[in-house]
Length: 265
Image (cartoon, rainbow, N blue to C red; front, top):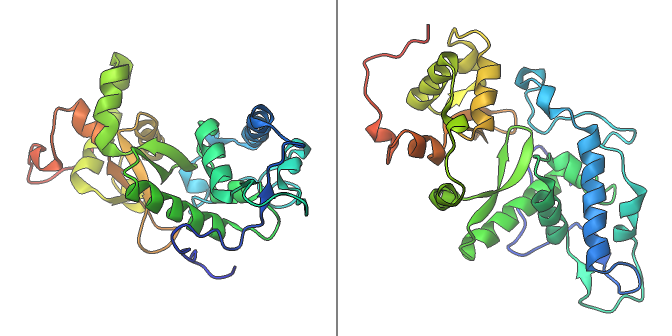
């Protein structure tokens, strides 16, 4: 598949992916889970997300290059998942959608489309992964699932939809740590809240020192999200989250205190 933008697949389609057999002779459910976990351990061993600065690359998909150029070293222990067997009975196959869901579900940390693609055969690229993720999200919406696959800083994560975050907060609570923000963080948060969507360039031009590091702290606290813009993968924007509204007792952004102008000092 070529081109700068992913081609959207028909609903439920997995065109372009090879078939991956699941045979009682090869892997049972427990072995499959362990293989996924080993795959994620390999990915995490090659990641340097905690120290990665946003300005190092304008492309959210970029990552460290591995020996095969995919950004991750392949683990031989997961190759068994992708060996074709001519005698596998029809209907007992691991679908690409299941593999994508599994690595995002057990992974915890975000994964780029390139790293997910590295788990498949060489002809599967990140454009095809992005298209399959969009198809998965369409299925989640049609089935009214409480979660979605969301692109943020560092890659994709499986996350609760914003309207369900209130339930999560009631179950797990909102501890004091989550609302302890420095004055500098609060100023950057206010800038994003009033000016959103805010591009990375606008953030740099705000005049706030270390604005990139500060907004990363807000992203980790799930007060700000990084979204892909309409002008391609290199166009990103910062916006506040529903958790931001919840923490500050707002039902919508229209309830923000109004000011004639906002200047970061």
